[in-house]
Image 1 (cartoon, one colour):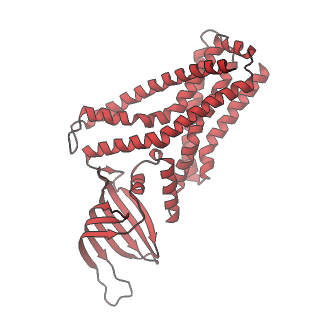
Image 2 (cartoon, one colour):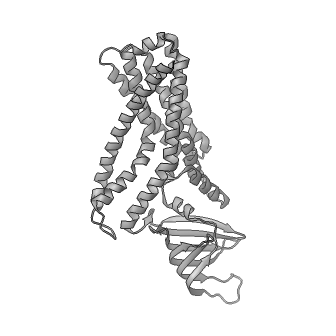
Length: 367
C-alpha cells in the first residue's frame, strides 16, 4: 500500500506543480504588462527592475488563490490518465479499494491544505505588505478610494470618528481628521493634522495639528475655539496594524488581523459582517483543497475511450471554476442578506463535498 500511495502522491504533486507554475507564469506576465503604464512615473522614477520586483512579490497571493484549482486540475489529470491506461484497474486489484483511495487522497489534500493556509496567512500578507510599501515609495503613499480609511473608537462617554487619507512608506499617517462627539452625539471638536506618527506608548503624535472646539449648546455665548499645536498627543487604542487593515483589501489580511479588526468594529458598534465573512473564508478556503481531491476521485472510476479524457478533464475544470464562483457569490449574498458569516463561508464547500461524495458512491456501486 505504501508503494501505491507513493506512486499516486508523486504523480499528483508533479501535475499540481506543473499546473501551478503555468498559472503563475501567466499571471506574472499579465501583472507586468499592467505595470508598464506606471514606468517613469511617481515621486521617484519607477523602473523596470522595481516593476519586476513588485510583480514577483504578488506571486504568493496568486499562489494562494490558484493552489486549490491547481490541485483539482492536477488530480483530475492523474486520476483520468490512470483510468485510461487501466493502471487504476490494476491498483484496484492490488488492494486499493474505494475507502483506501479516498483516505489516501484526503491525506494528500490535507498536505495541500496546510500549504495553502501557510501561504495565505503568513507568506502572502507579508509579501503584499512589502509590495505595497515598495509601490508607495514611488507613488508617495498607500491609500484607498478618494477619502481614505475611516475608523471609530469609544473612550468613556465620548466617541471618535477618525479619517486617515493615506499611509506613508515609513508607516506615518497622512491627512488625519478626528471628529469627537459627546454621549448625546453632538460634535465637540474636530482635530486635523497633515501628518501623524505612532508614539512608543501607542498614542498618536499629530504634527502641525489644528483643533477646533465647539462649546456646549447650553453655553451663554456661542463661540468656536481654534488652536494650533506643533505636536499634539492623542491617546487611542487604534494601532498601526488596524490602520493598515483598513487601507488594504480584506482578502489580503491574515486570519489574526481579520479577527482582531472584526472585534474592534463590534466593540465600537460598527458593522463587521464583511470582515467576519472574510475571516471565516480564510479559515475554510484552504480546506477547499480537500474538496478538490474528493471531486477528482470519481474520474478514476470512469471508463475512457481514446480522446475522451480531454472532455472529462475539461468538465472537471469547469466544475472547479463553478465552485470558486459560487464561493464568491455566497460571500456577497451573505453580506447583503446578513447571513451567519460561518454559513456563508462554509456553504459552497459543504455543497460540493456532498455532491462529489454522492458521485463517488454512485460510481463505486454502479461499477
